[in-house]
Length: 290
Image 1 (tube, helix red, strand yellow):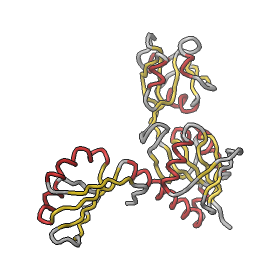
Image 2 (image 1 turned 90 degrees about the vertical axis):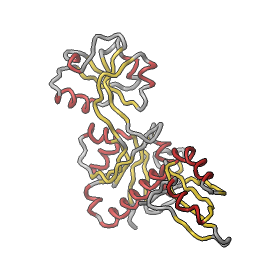
Image 3 (image 1 turned 90 degrees about the horizontal axis):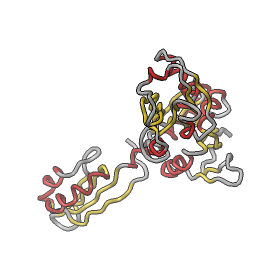
């Protein structure tokens, strides 16, 4: 029986990944052996592994596929198939950045000022490549954690991952340059990608997870309206394609449905009511498959 060995990120991305997989239709549970979770799909054999390592194991074929950051693919120099970009992170649906940060009172103002300086980071390869590309000679050392507290007492600068910059600001650090912007990627081993069954399973996973992400920012609006006010209502109602309009059993009335961005609903409700819409319902979505 064929099974897809799938690497899921353990650590900061774990909760967000499990929530996304749940919306995509896959229920994952972890027990005491948390690196071997269970999933309600007999075709998938999941593994919980640190995001930093997933691309290496996918490249080596120990995993058929995995979800990890583009930054760690670059850091490891992994030769894998990038199947899909999945824009989500620990704190929201947005990319993350690796940045160069220095103490607020540091004399370092630009990356050229890093020449001859000491830099701490978890992403040594990524940082060294960035320095080499910019002709900068600096001493880069691996940081085992708590990187933000190492400047200025232990190092002159750090290269750190951030979503909002709040942790850097809390440690009196300022950003002087963005090294890399990164998003989560669904990746596949090249041999697995050439296997028809595994490729089909990975593609199914990509479609469902991307559909779940597409649904994150959208809702379904349903309402009833007088038939003679439909065109007026449609002018106020954006839609993914075009709103659905169906006759109701009551003469002269129709039902209207439309998928819209959640952020615009609060601004359009009063316009819809003024146009005659009644019984307006807003429903969340699990998946939106284009």
